[in-house]
Image 1 (cartoon, rainbow, N blue to C red):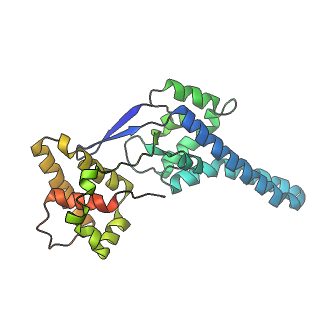
Image 2: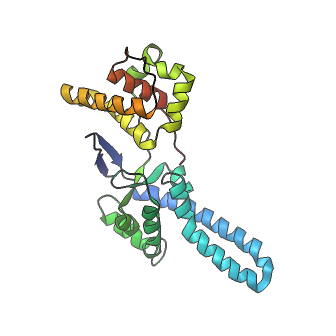
Image 3: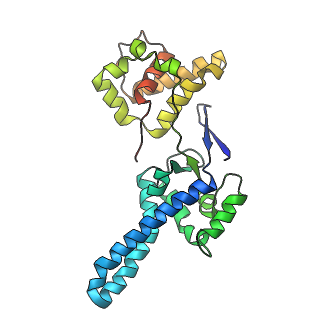
Length: 247
């Protein structure tokens, strides 16, 4: 599996592992079984309408072939059911949220990747590409990565009872959990995990910027002068630790 790095405007690096070809093939197999099941259901439901039903079956099959991946990947943050089961996901190569155009392009190219059978063209291209990208990924500037969940070191988790005032305030905690995005979660957790690797002046500046940004973003209480910038980010990390995103 190859490593891929994205650098944010705050000069924080996110490292991702690209999904292996075997994992992707297993996810594709699961999705294909679900697609077959959907097509069989459509055929059974529409076949009773005679000649019109036959025409409707072909329309339904087209919509299933085209819409299955487009809908699920856009709706579930880059995860079709097969990808979700195998803990991988599609993401934009620049780290931004997947857009409709990204998903549309990569799935329009699926018709080429599947030639002549069973994703043979796409598999060969992904095998050659250093980041395991098929033609659809290259065209849409996306890649498939492992959906690994970053965990805070135990030393930080042991500070929960001492510093985690956000967790104790139900209104603040719920506001954070409601507003935080996947990218913000990754940024907060990466900052905490990598803090000891940063030069002191860089560390101070990054945590200052992050604390100012998230105080406003989550409407944090103004009477928390006792919390330093780094403690503020730690409190946030403890609240969002282990969050799962379904969309």
